[in-house]
Amino acid sequence: MNTVPTPLQEIDLSIKDNPNNIRLFLKQEYLNHPLIQGNKWRKLKYNLEAFRESGKKNLLTFGGAFSNHIHATAAMGKHFGISTIGIIRGERAAILSPTLNFAEANGMQLHFISREKYRNKYQENQLEEWKTLFDNFYLLPEGGTNEAALRGCRELGEEIMQQTTTLTPDIVCLPVGTGGTLAGLVSGLPPSIQVIGFSVLKGEFIKREVRSLVEQFGGHDTCSYKVNVSYHFGGYAKWSTELVDFMNSFKNKHDIPIDPVYNGKMMYGILDLIRKGYFPEGTKILAIHTGGLQGIEGFNQRFGNLLH
Image 1 (cartoon, rainbow, N blue to C red):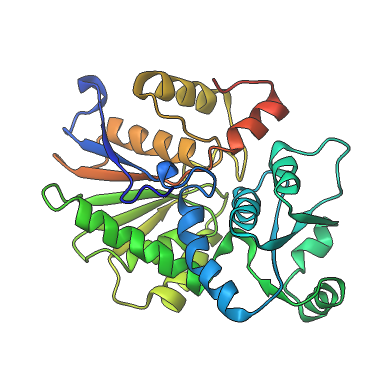
Image 2 (cartoon, rainbow, N blue to C red):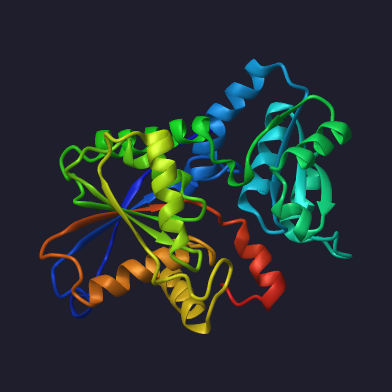
């Protein structure tokens, strides 16, 4: 069921938009699993192992109404016969999002809480409430980022090096949400490669979050990395007509779907920087398509089938 290593595809760049003769490759991580897709499979792989070793009865985690993590965790629960609980930010809507419909259909028990309560979800008194409400659970953080998750993401870096022995990239790019995938990835790549994470969150704080995760889980023996905060389009799940037009054009040209929350913004950012001559002459870039395609259905439900 799993496709490893996931395929690489070179992206055809027009001469007028590529002044420095950059070569761009896309690692199609969205093909690594039909339901537990992309970096979510990397993050959940060793958490599944840890859950089984823990002897716990349930797996409890957190997310919003359109969360890739909730979708992937529910799919994992169904596939591997695990009882899953999702603590969902906000009140239950009369019509659930496609993500939450999928989660319930795959057996996840949804528990809706206020946004204020959600912000305090890891505080001791709140954790005690979860223990009262839900029996004997394994706690998986929002977004799935923990030490087990970063172990899986480290393997992504190692896989890239095994896969590109004849064409080693100079730069590896990926979208950044919680920062967990980047923190794991950099510990699996050699110092000669630079990683650029394209933040989908508004604000400089994400740089501190990523640095903390790298130091906590990745150690100091990592390649160099930076977080670009210029292509968030207004913040998490925010978008513009320009972004939507770009995504539709990209799919039409390359036959590769990209989601509006993560990979659409990363690809827009990479191609914009190439067009502006940001990267040195002849740079080889490998971009990681981290999945999240389930988000397209939710986006179209909310905004009227804008993505083709």
